[in-house]
Image (cartoon, rainbow, N blue to C red; front, side, top):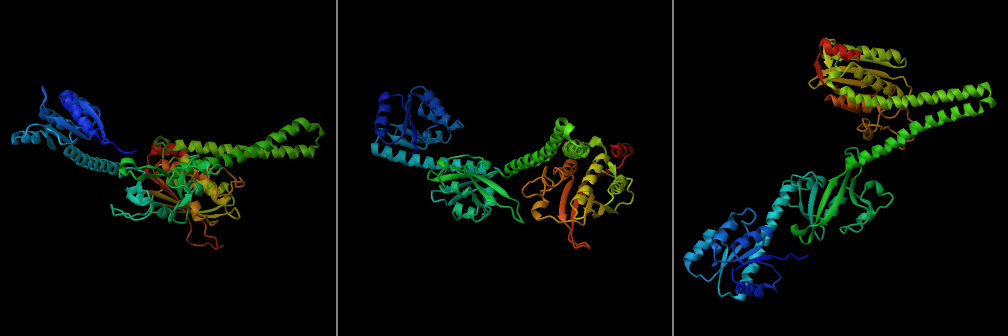
Length: 512
């Protein structure tokens, strides 16, 4: 839609207002009228005009006083004012200039001159407004979390804020950007879904949610960067609209990072797939076995009854272990509170020994570094929490070891950040893409989520919840040195904040 400049005509004489209306009504302006100074101030505040044609000689509040008041108004101070006057003396014009007038036109009015002056001043005022709007737009977008671009009709980038330059690897520091947006985007991202991009830049019809694309691909547009060895996957939702006053012949484009949202939804899907399978399988065996024993016990041999009872017992144990894992993870959230106590290095060593004795097939070698008095150095995690952490990590090492008999090297070291706890196994390694995901709730290294891996995928999530909750850090990486069997193995590294050991908190933590 074409923009129409608004002109406010101020004249105390009706014939003067009608004369100006006759000169301008067919020139494409939007005209409003005021019969005196107070009405001018009211209407200008209600509808800020592009130009004010202000008569000087008015009773009560003359044009000079109106001009002064307009210039003192915060919203009207920059509106161009053309004073219409029969006065032709130098003193009157100086008074008008001092009051803030931008231009003068003398009565009787010359139709051609009036139109020429208005055309010039409205064009200049429009440019001034555009520059002001552009400055405000730039100020906002440069501080925004989302990426914003302005494209012309050919799709060439005319403006890109700092976030857009970062997403698209464009020159920084306001350097000129040359290139087509879609070409630049396609060199780094996949356009998903392809069908939605066929009509670019016209808006597609259809669903706007990423997970609905499989059912109906005519939805919102996304730029997808697939996961690589170097980068995690990334999803940018692309929203686009007419640029309006910023660029009448262009588009405003927003790139919104929805990666976290999509990952969260996929995790929920993973939870449903994993837990549904983990719970349904034992429940099916449990209920089927019980129903069979109740309804057909008279027709079963003793051997068959024992076989079904064993199946029911196994299913009950599996169901109990699954529920216990979920409850234990939920409980771990409460273990990060300071009042839960601390745990000494000596307590950690004794816990490791206890776990080694309980797991007969596991061999553990524990070493200390930079710690002289293990009974006087504590970590900001309770004894109960440390038992859960060490139990999960050591049991995981055994569960995923090819022979279920790992040789573990556990190193405890005092570092500037606190206490570093490393558990090195001699089992399998993980692809780089999995190493950063193993701390995610319900995540298991299964490609198709069949549920064949034992457990629910909450063990390492519980560890991360406790360690991160006290301000620590978690890291997993493959061993650089090969073992005697040729397997490199995995290293789990925890950084736990240290705290001075005190008798009260120490004993409370050790007993929790």
